[in-house]
Length: 64
Image (cartoon, rainbow, N blue to C red):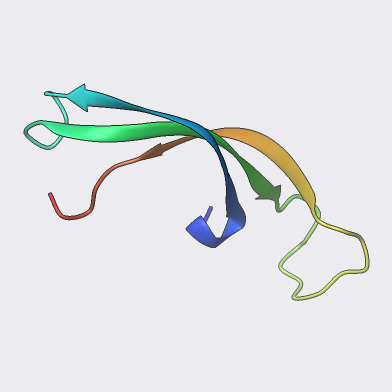
């Protein structure tokens, strides 16, 4: 799923240092929502509203 399909909830994020990831990096964990693409069948438009589902999000700094 592309990043444009996610919505972050800015309430609570935690960070965690991961020495095993990319030689050691701090990543960020949080909760958010993703647009469920089930039922789109590769169509550009549809009449039904998008369905969102809760997801766990992990972000890793890209400058590493």
